[in-house]
Image (cartoon, rainbow, N blue to C red):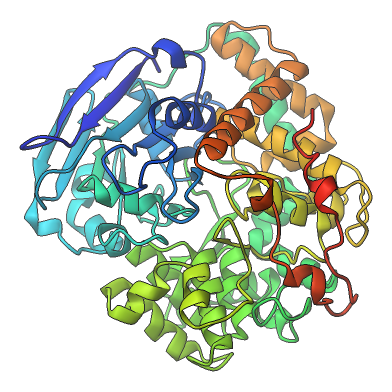
Length: 577
């Protein structure tokens, strides 16, 4: 990967140019998106204005033979949080872009008129064409329209109707190996920024593109073998995730009393077993679906799956743990078929399932519908996808919906909805929610590892002690992993197996002819966070924004009757390294 593709949407029609990496040499994934956004986007700009940019970047190991290296980073100033954003997606696009030699695609400039454009990228070049036929098409409609162009050798990157209408809760979709738009850069409204540039879809054709070759092939092959073996022998990445998918966590987190239910009112959901990963896998298998599937080629964990209806017809990808929680326990809905339908609609319209489920939970508390009413929840998602006045409010996110209906109880940080772990009962995650530059985001520092799963050590989830150090270390490590293009779930094996961590470093060294150490990887993570915090500071964020809503300190969570009791002074030390 030795070039950047810049697409400028200014003027009568978009134009493009290719350039070398320059100051961004050696960066990939989140490291590259955050560096570009921090260097090139005015921090005080409007997220939907001409000064914002959307940066799409495969990771440093994407396009190689490295297993699980197909993650794609999408960065910009967030329409939802007002700060910097990196949203992460699986699917095929990262591998194909990397093989075509692109370290990043950058959408920039001021859209002229209201035309929508389709971008085609292949080894033969770049084409940008206006296409009125794509207006207000959903992601699955786009997939059907263009599948003959990309499904065999490439991938489609697209926005649904939510992104086209520039909603703060809108995603950028990426197609899976079967050509379905099931993988999403979901958080922070990145789809709205793509919509503001008038780019409806990017079709990436990998025909004729070759796998990237390391500078030291033998060392790379050996390290990849050790890394693969490490993933396969770890009980989480080698057994739990392939068998039950990410939804294996439902019973685990519910038993721990940390499963936020009924808009974060209690830590246990009475019907959790009905929507657990075990129940989901059993149902899928019985119907002829598949609980084990890779979201991109080269994945050895295969924690995705295929959900089918009672007649064996495809409904959606296997709903992830966060999706099952947000539309399930958080909303009092215990029917896997209804949750799968909501997951499909979110993917189709291009909505973040975490934000959408949390928004519906707030709407339920506001009395717009009853907890447990799946059909009305489905109706509300349709309102968002169609852009009705109510749908526009809901599509603006959880915080905006709570404000519109006069509620204090909005589970958000920096205006982004919290995921499926209550910060009072998984306090390491609470520290991450509060302090990550991204807004409430479990993936930024997944303290569930040590708090609940006893991976990489053990820190009591109900006590304040040790949580700041845990979150700090995980935020640094996560930023570095996001730069590589590796799936974040490799962290389970990396944290528990020193040889697997070393194998990851060895792959990077063999690929690029480097001599990185573990300390260098840590420094990479710190440099990414420094860029992100610098941008947010210039955007007006202060220590006061690194806080949970006050009611998490005031309201005790059943069954442990705990509050979030980590002091502001402690939170302010997270980035003191």
